[in-house]
Length: 224
Ligand code: FPP
Image 1 (spheres, helix red, strand yellow):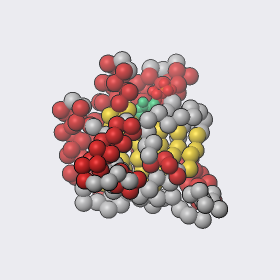
Image 2 (cartoon, protein in one colour):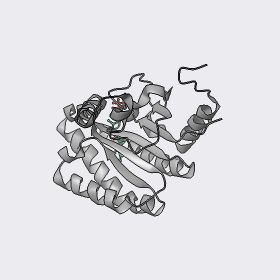
Image 3 (tube, rainbow, N blue to C red):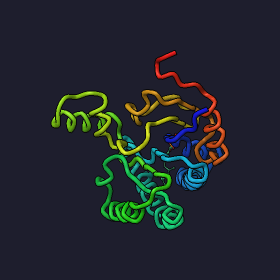
Image 4 (cartoon, rainbow, N blue to C red):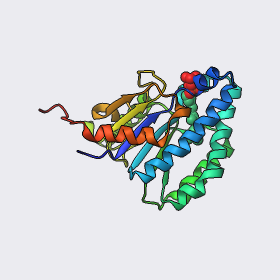
């Protein structure tokens, strides 16, 4: 049995959660933030070294302006309301992706949050903001090439996730079975769990079950 060290989640289904209840999409995202809160607490209590969450992809800019702005204000509010609790609990915040393309107030808040938790050594919460995996790989390969020969190791060392443990488990909620340009390189040997649960309904218990199932799987990395 091997315990998972690093779990990543594609948090999908906020819109469908709201639609099913004839509620505005914004409320689905709001409930999605509550799921983030539960899962980060759970990850910390379960001793995960790293949790990576796909919060905003490079494709999400194509959503209506109002929805993009709702997501931004939810993220700001989440930092303002929850940062202290997580910082006290030893969580380190890290961002993957080009978050500097966001509005200056969001960038400033994110940077303060990173600085506030920089010395922490508990669970790393890596939030993917304006993130796209093909872009990340292209950037890493460019940097690796400038330093010497390109190998899987030299590329890995330049990825945004270079300081995180190898990805053990990728979870996607809401029944969609695709990677949507998330952690393509890091998924090379990761286990995958696709669940029909919509993200706002995802609980720490779902995470616990996923970790237990992971621990019983035998990973062979291509060997026998
Ligand atoms: C997918 O649901 C979800 C997103 C695009 C955004 C995820 C963001 C959050 C949960 C909130 C902010 C995050 C943090 C870290 C505070 P969807 O809208 O694609 O759902 P649908 O496919 O059912 O329409």
